[in-house]
Length: 317
Ligand code: PEP
Ligand code: MG
Image 1 (cartoon, rainbow, N blue to C red):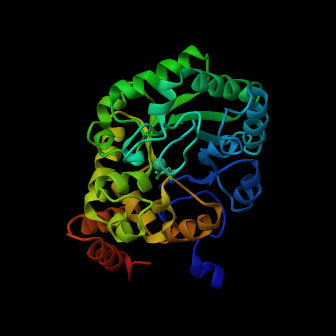
Image 2: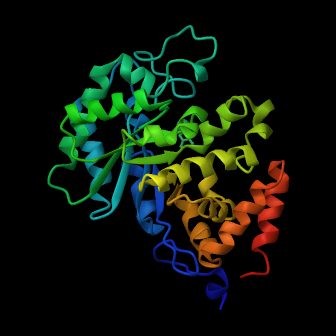
């Protein structure tokens, strides 16, 4: 009975009326894969490849070392989706050989895709290693770039993927407001979007992720952030492409229902959150999620948005 009260305890993510929302895991490397499989993740929605590079901040890991690590993650999800993010160095993840030492505002400096475009050999090696790791595996590989600002960034990344001969879908993370505002133009260059709500909040509210004193300003429930999510999701739908969420927002069960109502097509989170999000989704219809999303967007603050969504969904279970 308890199980029934919690809703679906296993199986693919879906609303109570069967609208599918794949539940994917965020992983940092092969060590996180067992927990993801155990939680019933339908694949990996964000493989943060930084871990491989953080061992030695003086140089990039060899191609062989990268192939080995990527292969271990890809092999864990035969037939599943694995979305690999290329190196996101800089700001909260500095690397000596890539990150300028004297930036006054590292979060606004050379980070993510920007640093890879400045060091094309690092990107080339990573893409070549991914290509080799995926060879012969049935896995459905997707590769995305962090910190894409506009169409030119998306094109530069897609060109690099093509030049590396990568057989995968290429995507862009939406974590800079300009990327959400111009999502349709970015989608002329890439095949999918993934919302990084942690950075998207940081840049939307001009509140550094690393400064505790402004952390209350980074609430992903804020209607300003919900508007940007809606814009990206609607743009993807108009282009017939997918738009997932891989930031922390996806791991909040109530917010996961709202994100679904805003039109996002998959949710990726730490493995431990998957059962709670699966359960919340399974207790509401897509129309209820849409009503909760509209109610949240009609407010003026994060606290009001959360309350409005809760009210819209309660009593409907
Ligand atoms: C994000 O910014 O939301 C994201 C998923 O990337 P990271 O937290 O690694 O910057
Ligand atoms: Mg990010």
